Structures are given as C-alpha cells and as structure tokens.
Amino acid sequence: MTVSDASEAVPESVRIGIVSISDRASTGVYEDKGLPALQAWLSSSLHNPILFEARLIPDERPLIAQTLRDLVDVTGCDLVLTTGGTGPALRDVTPEATLDVADKEMPGFGEQMRQISLRFVPTAILSRQVAVIRKKALIINLPGQPKAIAETLAGLKDAEGKQIVDGIFAAVPYCIDLIGGPYLETRDEIVRGFRPKSAQRPALGQAA
Ligand SMILES: Nc1ncnc2c1ncn2[C@@H]1O[C@H](COP(=O)(O)OP(=O)(O)OP(=O)(O)O)[C@@H](O)[C@H]1O
Ligand SMILES: Nc1nc2c(c(=O)[nH]1)N[C@H]1C(S)=C(S)[C@@H](COP(=O)(O)O)O[C@H]1N2
Image (cartoon, rainbow, N blue to C red; front, side):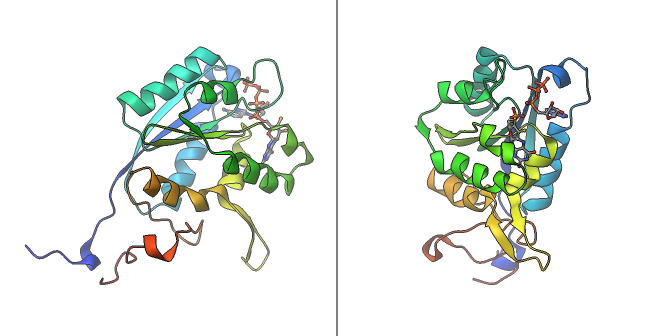
C-alpha cells in the first residue's frame, strides 16, 4: 500500500513522564498508587500510542528538579505529570522544584485545578500545584491523593454526563501543539481536548 489516506492514519506517539513524589511510597511504607493511576488515566484518555517514563521519588527539592530536567532534556518527554508534594507540609516542595526548572509559568492550570477540586473537597485550597513550560515540554503538578488525579484531569460531570467543570486536560493538547509537540487526540467520552477550529485536524477515521 503506497497511498496514505486519513482513514488509515495512526496518531503520533507521545512520550509522557509520570512522577510520583512521596516519602512513604518511595520507601515502601505504603504502596505507590500514583503511578498506576496516572498511567491508567492517560492510557484510557488518548488515542496516541504512549511511551511512559515513570519515576517514584521522595520529597527532595533538588532530586525532583533533577528528575524533571532529565525527563525533558535527556529522555525527551513532551509532557510530564507529577503527583504529590503540593500541600503546605514542611516536606511538600514539588511546586518549588517545578519552578526551579521553568522557562515559563502557566498559572491557568493551577487555578483551574483548584476550582475543580473545590467541588470535591474544601481542602483543595491547600494544594499549591503549578504548571510550567521547559523547552518543548509541559510539566504539570497534580495533588497526591490518587483519586485527585482523575478528578483534576477530567473535571466533573453531572448524573446525565453533562460537563459541569472542565478538567485541565482539555487544554493540554492545544498547549502541546503550541510548543511544537505531537498532535494529541483525546477520547471524548473521558475528556474532550479543546482546540480552536483553525488548529483542528480531521478526526481519526475521517477522510480529509
Ligand atoms: N504515591 C501515593 N500512593 C498512595 N497514596 C498516596 C500517595 N501519595 C499520597 N498519597 C495519599 O494522599 C495523602 C496526601 O498526599 P501528600 O502528598 O500530602 O503525602 P504526605 O502526607 O506528604 O506523605 P508522603 O510524602 O509520605 O506520601 C497521603 O497522606 C496518602 O494517604
Ligand atoms: N481533586 C482533589 N484535590 C485535592 C484533594 C483531593 O482529595 N481531591 N486533596 C487536597 C488536600 S487534602 C491537600 S493537603 C492538597 C495537597 O495535596 P498533596 O500534598 O498530596 O499534593 O491537595 C488537595 N487537593
């Protein structure tokens, strides 16, 4: 077969770093539930083949910053999601470490996450997540509670399935477009990536 058409197109693969930051999970005091939750949610939400780069590390600022630098600069991740260490406790330093490696801050992600999380728990205001651009990668902090991963990424729907608050992942594909990464295609039943019309390509399985 020499002629390619859009109905046969396979989406580009994407390299995603997933980083669980927890003193207790990284030392085996409890089982890490952050990495499996991140991997499961991303796998069910994207059509693109995903190359995962997983790291489980303690709440140490220089180590977190170095892990993020390696994932972007050496491993070539397009997107990095962290979970844990965003609260007010003395050892919670994920936002500081993320800002240490930032070229640009993307404050909208943290603002939207706190809006979503307030629908679930009043303590959402204790979470200090940030998102940043480093080179051609987007890095986003998520809270440490494993259930908060799907909540913040997908947002909240009512009993009839109507979206009440958009999850932050709705803005991720277009952000990755703008920084020169692969074209991410979401599974709309989980989360609907939003792009302006001018940036949309034909959906999978549809001729151009
Ligand atoms: N990786 C994880 N796996 C399973 N549960 C987690 C994980 N990280 C956090 N949790 C749960 O969410 C709670 C809040 O997360 P937070 O990041 O504030 O952890 P913490 O209390 O600072 O402790 P630690 O860093 O040892 O996980 C934890 O107390 C724990 O119940
Ligand atoms: N969606 C969601 N956001 C949440 C929570 C949650 O259960 N669900 N827990 C909150 C709590 S209790 C804290 S202390 C902060 C910081 O969590 P972290 O230190 O685990 O990152 O996240 C908040 N955000």
